[in-house]
Length: 282
Length: 278
Image (cartoon, rainbow over all chains, first blue to last red):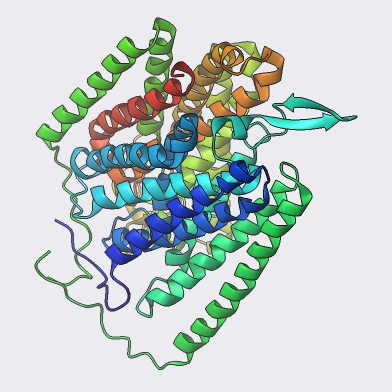
């Protein structure tokens, strides 16, 4: 049996965060499809917003999972999320416009199987294990797809592997300078993996507050978006990349400021650090 | 019962039903691959599963100390399983990728040596820091005598600790774990690279030289993803710290083999279907 070491008190319920994160992430990924409809690349920045939304959801999931002493450290959960998410996401890109939905379903299947293996075969016996790993796999897949859409302007396999470069006015397909072949996917992978595990790792403890942790997640997400926006200068038009960069910078400065305010709020309060609470009946 | 005393009491016993379900799942996934794809794709999946199992088995050897080790209260390297496995195994994978042109056998051996070398350097520098930085001798808390050298451990162990530093058996365990994990990661990479090099040109309608960067990155990112999945599953199996091959927790490895085989089969199936399905 396992004992829950920390109690979740107050804050927004996890189900609400899950639904909000899932819906806003899917909607924002689909908003990048406006690029195709309008023949521009101006709407790529919605990919970054999708990634931030998914990361906020994933961060709260990590909180739910790691409240049970899993004994392996919080970063392992983030690595698991993106390790399984990248597999689902890359396969899903083959399905064109349906890619985000397929990524969602496939990541859910992979996450559920991994959750079963961890919980039953490896005898972890943690009540939320299967659900949490399912959610985190989806978060990994959706946030990577968001970063992909931000960096190269689309989320289909063709967008990720082909780039049209014009030499002396002649358009030539290039496979080298793309999201996958250029190795940008590896950068996006680790940017996301760190952004998802860092907030709970940094904020855990008796003074944990949900709004501070989620603000830090948004901050981590936006700073990852800044890096991806800089990478996108190589793959999409300069004006579109500038828009992404400005959106990312505004988001980062705002959330960083908010996190500072919240940290001061929590640090200035006198904390009656009681003994670790006894929880029974788990 | 207080929460302080209640470390996760994960049984070291096996769950027979789940083990059978895991094995059946693994066989079903192999069967799906056999009927969906061609024989070369099936052999690729077998290679990926072997690689995944090597990673899962190898990580058990690595002496993981976690936070207690950083305070000199438990033996091992002072970080988590996932970080150590990623360090040792990815170093091996990069080493093996350099030798990719020399064929699969040479690349896998190079990958194993890369992983083992990385772990050997890590273990040695950890002991340097322990002995000269923190001033503690190496002593195991789980065995009376080192199984390899036969040195007595109890005299060097401080009271109230589970041992500290990195005894010889843990050092050897770390290197052996690096060898297995490096070889496993490289094997997954090589199998996927061969498959992608063969099938991507027709899929994208381009020459092999043009798609080579895509094949390399796709195989690499899938290998890293599967490596992390297997390493974290093994970390869940160990639940925290392990001293090395002499630790009682080492006996849990059959669970990890089943889990790694099923997880690698599932992830490998998806990674292969990306080029087979149109």
